[in-house]
Amino acid sequence: TQLLKQSPQFLSIQEGENLTVYCNSSSVFSSLQWYRQEPGEGPVLLVTVVTGGEVKKLKRLTFQFGDARKDSSLHITAAQPGDTGLYLCAGPLSGNTPLVFGKGTRLSVIA
Amino acid sequence: NAGVTQTPKFQVLKTGQSMTLQCAQDMNHNSMYWYRQDPGMGLRLIYYSASEGTTDKGEVPNGYNVSRLNKREFSLRLESAAPSQTSVYFCATPGGNSVSPLHFGNGTRLTVT
Image (cartoon, rainbow over all chains, first blue to last red; front, side, top):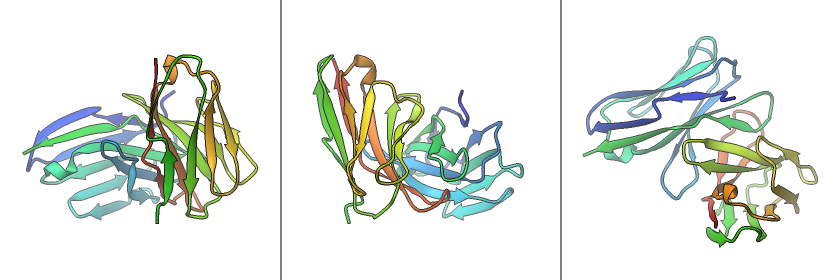
């Protein structure tokens, strides 16, 4: 059972384009996190969203947590080659239990 | 600050061989985790340790054992490696609560032939 479904699985775009990736669940999460992973490295945290309806901005990246806390999105404005990587969403099933991860969206930004 | 250190970085085993993956953290965190990452499968939890002296199974524990040697170190052992255990293994440690970031090592790439 895949608790966190990410879409699309792959995305290849030109530099300067905008994009949105999604993380959806039928379960309510107390919080969701987004990570970015580059080849040969472990994932690195981008943001944590904790309140339904919350919007957080990190330079050209905008993260949103759904009102019902079942879904989240990541929007990148004017993508750059440096944005290339694997984007993972993750959340705790309950309390302080280990995070469960989605399968990720692999983004390629072509110059 | 090293954060989370994993050794080795790469390993090739033959079916039936055993090995131990090592993980050490210098962040003084209580919890430590082992995940495996396979193409198209995301990160799946193998085992975790909420504190020194405790370990619990995750989503995919079969074929693995773990030891929480002390607060800093958490090792993962494959007693009899199988090709299905070919994967990239990540050790991670969270901060003190559910919104704390997970800090990952750089992974061990294991191939079982």
